[in-house]
Image (cartoon, rainbow, N blue to C red):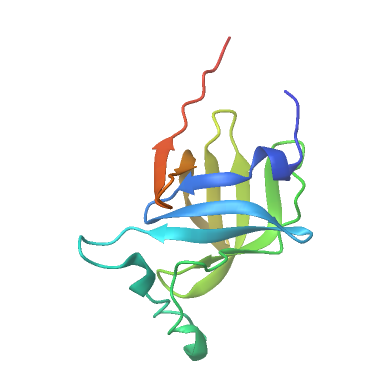
Amino acid sequence: MQVFPAETAMTGYYLTSESIVEIKPCGVELCAKIEHVFVADGVDPKSVLDSKNMDREKRSRPLVGIDLLQGFSRQLDSSNSMKGGRIYNPRDGRSYKAKLRLHDDGNLTVQGCFLFFCDGETWRPLMVTINPDGSHTAILESTVVSH
């Protein structure tokens, strides 16, 4: 298996449990910006605030646009993983030590750790198209694996 630099292998849009995130290079690090938050019909996703942030001054900022990653270089290790950075969890307003692992099928395992306990989820890659009217269409990418 060939290992690619993170900016070609890990960048792109991902479906998380509560949002769509775009991973892209930001200077010498990777960032993961929230592009869309899933909300009830009739609610503007841009109106959802970072209300649980530990920093009171940030509680009035919208979740859309927040960078979830800090301190991740743009280079994958030999196991297609990254360690040593942190991830912000808007559900509780805290940042955690984090691990990222890119799988052969394009899925990304994202784990946040506190002391010896780690929890996380799998982010699935999306193909996002910008329509002529400026709206976006997203579909799950399907990866064909040949044996």
